[in-house]
Length: 121
Image (cartoon, rainbow, N blue to C red; front, top):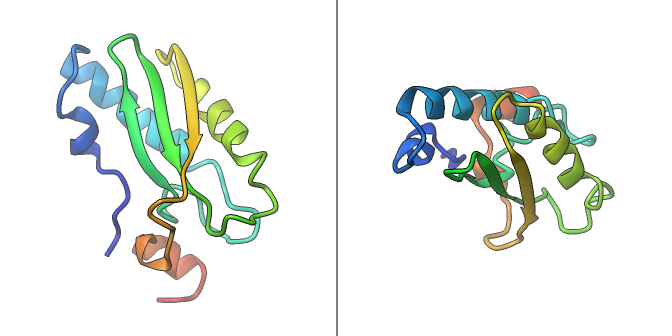
């Protein structure tokens, strides 16, 4: 079962007008889908590495993410890649990416698209 952050969770409560919030949410998810784990041929969103996306009323974005393994060779670089990608979204005032390892990532978090990409489906 894919447990990736859902669009409805992001839209739930905000002072930002619903239409703008929906566009920001879609654009942020699209930006996240441009960031790939270098060892797996799938983007970090479809892999289920994004645990939380909060769009604050000042249009700053807070993201909790994880890695497929704590010892991942790009652990130090990946948050910067995410920050850069989301920072290009029109209307985003800033991006704060926090790396978390609880709960640990498991392949169950992957979408069907990611499972197909890695040949597990």
